Length: 119
Image 1 (cartoon, rainbow, N blue to C red):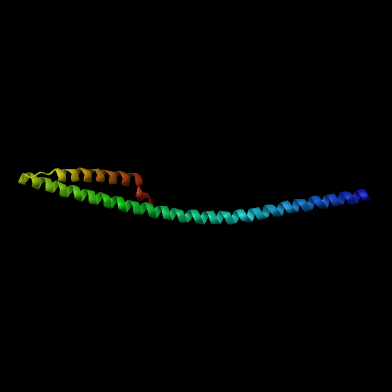
Image 2 (image 1 turned 30 degrees about the vertical axis):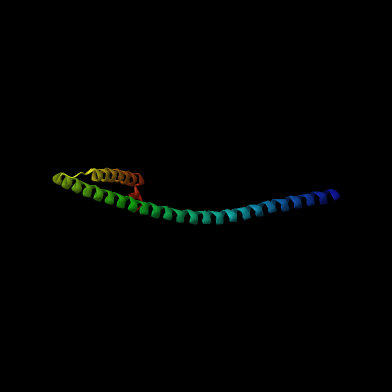
């Protein structure tokens, strides 16, 4: 009879141990679920922030492009007028080169940014 009681106690210990493991896994599963929701919310918000930053950068690059084009146009007008008057236009030539460089830089940035995909 002592043997039966001993076996019974061992079985009860094993069952309790199994239940503790199952309860521990259930707690882990619940925590995973809340972690999933939290991670999803954080990542969704950051995508919106990235999209907004890209759109803002695109506006800045587009503005750089417009300003550079305008400066280049003004420099061209000055160079033509200077030639007609026989005046030195080295400064205007320098500004024109700078404007052309900044224009090319803005175009490269706009192209590499490819912001249209975020609109």
